[in-house]
Image (cartoon, rainbow, N blue to C red; front, side):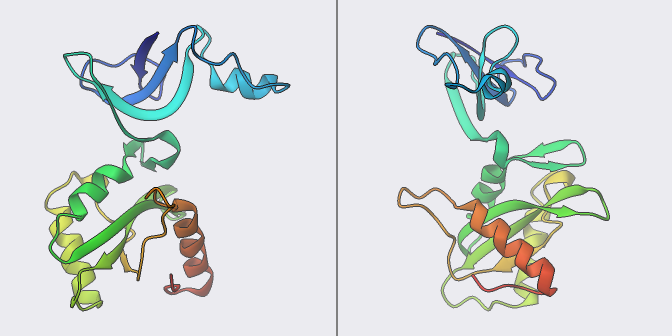
Length: 186
């Protein structure tokens, strides 16, 4: 099997740079049954399977998967990996659990990151704490990774039995908040 990592323009990236992982070999499936359009969209013109996994390869040839392409937040041309932001946020002493997703902002015509946080026991769930966490975070990340859609406190992060974040449920919550002009309960 051979693999390569490509940028959004489908150009191969250098070692250590993130991108989508593409695979090719005899053990890769041939396509979707009775779905030529799906098959065409899943394979590159040179026969690589587009996995949808975001990752990088190190100088020793080890591959690391860091996120899913569909979960990336696209902020003004930048691709922001929610897992990276979650990894930093979970290190804050007032954060017990966290999930980050992109919220579409029509005024800017782009997605902006929002953190859904389960606060640590005894932490006050107020605007002051939201701002404290957002400011702490902003001091540690590049400008395009800031929590421009804010912080929302929740009782729990919806997850599968295996621990995968159910981002779909959080997106539904965000849409509900938008409709009612406030914060929905989760």
